[in-house]
Image 1 (cartoon, one colour):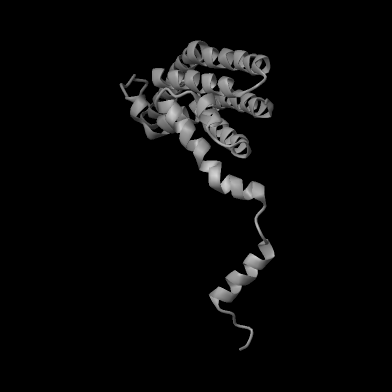
Image 2: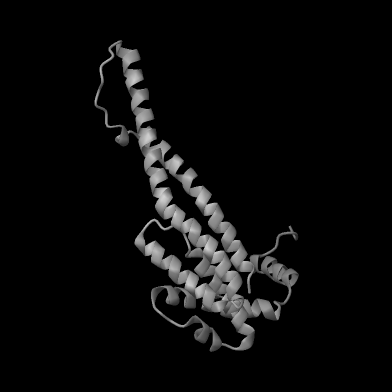
Length: 196
């Protein structure tokens, strides 16, 4: 029975194993959320990120900038709406303001903009074509199933778009199409993280 420990004893043992936090860990705890707050404020309002970061002590700036970069990168996404396009531009402007190597950042942004523009222009056309093709395919399958069951080759009006199987297949196809664009964006985001 002496092997049974209280929760306090278990917690104490775990704390002893972890040890004292490093100075960097303490700074991350203290300033990690500051960068996230500044990024959110920047996205919603118009604040000068460089001057806001400059208000903090030197040790904290790198951590704060890292937090800002993380949030701004997460805000770059496929532009499904006009608001998303504006958020993308704002996030890119914020990242560029904080990065030292502006030429490298602009190089990545140029490729990123190409993907985003292609998604907006060509992606919409591709989606429409894929939708119409899928719809025609499903209509043909339903007509064939009706013909096989009834033996009558009559054309029936069926609302294919409201069929659960059609909706499910369209969502799958859409996700597949968008994943190609998303993967490219993610690759560019990784490049941006590496740029100082």
